[in-house]
Image (cartoon, rainbow over all chains, first blue to last red; front, side):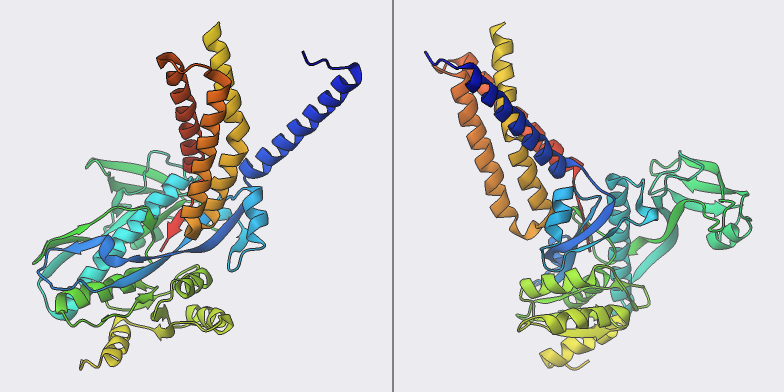
Amino acid sequence: MWCVTVKQRKWLFVGAVWLGLIYLFTMFILVHRIDYRLSAPGNIEPIDSFIQFDVDTEEVPRYFAVYVMSIDRPTIFQFILAQFMPYVRVEPLPESARGISTPDQFRSGQIARNTAIDASIITVFESLGLPITYEEHYLVSLIFNFISEPRLNIGDRILTVNGVEDIFEGIALTECGEEAVFEVLTHEGEQRTYAIVRQAEEDCRFGLVISRYYDITSLGLTFQVRENLVGGPSSGLMQTLYVYDLLSEQGLSRDLIVAGTGTILIDGRVGSVGGIEQKIYTAYLDQVDVFFVPQGTNYEQARAVYDRLENPSFELVPVETFQEALDALRARAGVDS
Amino acid sequence: MLWLKRVQRVLIGLLFFLPWYALFINLILIDIRRVEVYGYGLLLGLVLQLILTYHLIVNKPTKARTMKLALGALLGLIVLGSFLVHYLPLRLL
């Protein structure tokens, strides 16, 4: 039998209290979240892993999108760790992001991703002269917590505002502090009317983000989009290159690892994106061969990171349009346009 | 109230490994590129928790005691899942 003296019992008690405190402190820094936004390098993802066309082809071209990890309200431990990790960016959480739940941000990202896929397909089909018809709509892609109408949902399609089909013209009819009448088609197919107040303050906001959305009504081919956890519009350019190369069978990517970032508009223009530093660093870690980046500020940010990298494996190519990216690949592959 | 005592011991095993799970989930979320390494860390935690729970509960393995061991593992997995869902970051293209 183990006998414990009064003195030993006292020390055991003190030890247990200390261990308890250490336990609580450890759990606190691992679980408690603070109001910052953290962006960390992610991975590259092959486009053909989430877009598949039913076409007979010997070789599926390989193009890669780059994603970054975005953590809103990281834990104290992650915040401290981020200070010692290369290319992890920590910034105060923007006021607009407060009160938006992660599932809502995820749904918003999925809408942006699906819209970018449709825009890529439209761009390629029109560029190759293939038959395609589509309609343009507007969707609610994000809702802030100060909106006056809680029944509105992300993904609802806006039909009219104040009875006007041109959404932005309808919005312009409403003064700050007044309410506008939104006619929407819900995800379940029900038509509803909501009166939403425009804030009286300086910023005069409704509390929602409206995004353009394409509904492809007919296409000569069938395709499948696989759902995954990655969201956002920034793979538009790479999706467009992939679909173009797949359908034109030019084999432009060859054995290269072609990656890049940039949104796509249906006229072929490439738009700017966020998280460029983390994306360049991800491309560096994954040893890609070519990396396309939108011309302008994004290219300047990318160049600053690129110049600091030790022996980067890839060529950094700034582009303004999808056509410029295509020309750069053709020049590499020795294919005439 | 023997069952209550056993559940208590399962919970003690779980509580003991909570910081371990939380640490590795924090690491996975901030450094997704090393997800396999941290994944093995999580797995190791689960195995250690099972061993600990086994020693706390089971002297002679019987069906009922093995069930309680499984309960410990299940609770561990639920805690892991809850952490992951709660702190899920966005992957942005």
